[in-house]
Image 1 (cartoon, helix red, strand yellow):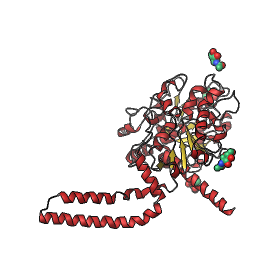
Image 2 (cartoon, protein in one colour):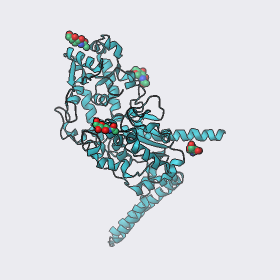
Image 3 (cartoon, protein in one colour):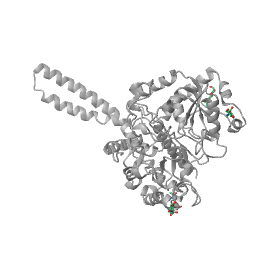
Image 4 (spheres, protein in one colour):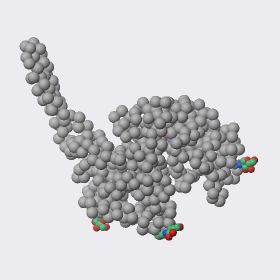
Length: 483
Ligand SMILES: *[C@@H]1O[C@H](CO)[C@@H](O)[C@H](O)[C@H]1NC(C)=O
Ligand SMILES: *[C@@H]1O[C@H](CO)[C@@H](O)[C@H](O)[C@H]1NC(C)=O
Ligand SMILES: *[C@@H]1O[C@H](CO)[C@@H](O)[C@H](O)[C@H]1NC(C)=O
Ligand SMILES: *[C@@H]1O[C@H](CO)[C@@H](O)[C@H](O)[C@H]1NC(C)=O
């Protein structure tokens, strides 16, 4: 499980330094002077000792002084947190840790203990598919697509701009695993009350907190590891919990894997894929691998038929089977597409394009698996990509994906013909774009900050939140001034 109070004193030091930044800047000059004087002094002592053969004791004393003089310098870097600092609530364990501890009981059918292991990354894959750079094996996990709440919690506790002093914070993170808490109650005949229980208790707890009252939650945020539609029940009989509709949620910013495009308090963040690079070199190797990969199929479809009327996936599957020269099928009927197989990733690695119909909702984790393999996603619903992940895929969707209207496909338009209409140069350009985005949508291995990928999906999400709160505060203050 995640560590709940890591490096408190260090964070504290950083916090204070933000506060004192201006003063410290002037102190900085004198510190440097001090440092130089100490070095010169030390040098003289060393030389004198050498010449006079004095005992070495005096050297060690002076080294100690030197170190003390130098110590404050590194934390001057705290201007890294120009957009402010984040405070992470230490919630009662029933809202996070206890859910993980009861992982065998998180859904009605299976144990989720594997899914929630390794701070949400899941089990390590132990080996890779043939042809993949072998030394990247430690960077691959069977990551569950619904585990972001744990990943974000673990990462934010180690964030460079975390403070343990709420007084210094401009953002408050609520590490409540709302998706994990509700999963068990979604599918079977639980009552509305049961589905809302954790959320209601959490909000009751929250509203008694002093820093909640200060702004009624408008400087608070949360990560939801399931799609937003799982938290938007309006009638007791409908699907999901009603968490997002609860009055106390009205101002809280939400990061989630699929957002409601009309809700300005919601930010779409990438689904976690299985790749968690531990260093810059891991990442570069992977990018080079997918860029130079020889692809034998024009396109691929990974998915299964559904038992619904005029099922769109059945059409894609049929089209793909009919065009077997250019389309690679991974038919997920049965259990073939569960974690523990490389077949899906291999299909993406082998294809220029991948078909991405909507799933139960508009988005799919599969679109990120596809792009991670350097394959170009083909969408049939605009809402699968438009207004969804703009902080991460910072370009017009036309520049890195293909859109074919599902109605045209139903009316007999050949996907193969449409895709054959793209020339090598166009494909190359779209792939370049996707490769540019990979570092922005993967979740690096935790603690790889030093050497690794600094602006991964998590970092971008938190920077985005901090910037947004800062901007809101600025415009709020400007308004007050005008009045
Ligand atoms: C849920 O379903 C089970 C079996 O289908 C039934 O025995 C039980 O009474 C139901 N519970 C509720 C709250 O409807
Ligand atoms: C918070 O909400 C309460 C009740 O709506 C209101 O009375 C209070 O003024 C609000 N406080 C702030 C800081 O907006
Ligand atoms: C695939 O081929 C079969 C047999 O020719 C045909 O009936 C079906 O409509 C084709 N599917 C698509 C999506 O074109
Ligand atoms: C999309 O690509 C075109 C052509 O390369 C480019 O001119 C345009 O600026 C791109 N759009 C964005 C938002 O970057």
